[in-house]
Length: 49
Image (cartoon, rainbow, N blue to C red):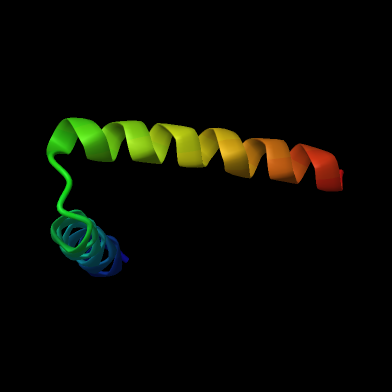
């Protein structure tokens, strides 16, 4: 179980780095993007429920 969690974390880090490089974002910009994405997803889910 611990191995699976470590693999998921490693994959998550790889995907974040790929996403950041693909969009040419620095850490600060990426944090704001993720923040607003969370707000949009939350509003969308609230509208569905």
